[in-house]
Length: 79
Image (cartoon, rainbow, N blue to C red):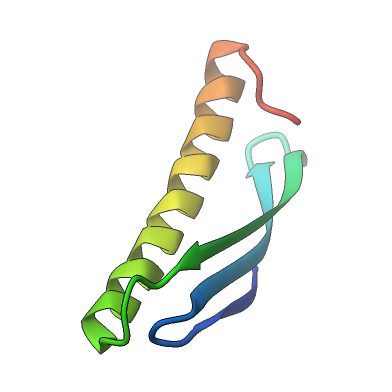
């Protein structure tokens, strides 16, 4: 659930999200967490802004993938 995703050229991009990993087969929640990331936009161009938006979303996906992998392997899944 993305709470905030905004930014401006030459400034920063902010991504805040609440996330939940559920096991629908067992009808239960496995993990719940929050994600917040602020990334600098290196210049005033729209291309730079879009690239940083993309990076922020990719990093959120990587975070969730690591949590899911941790659950699957019995490794660290929670904070």
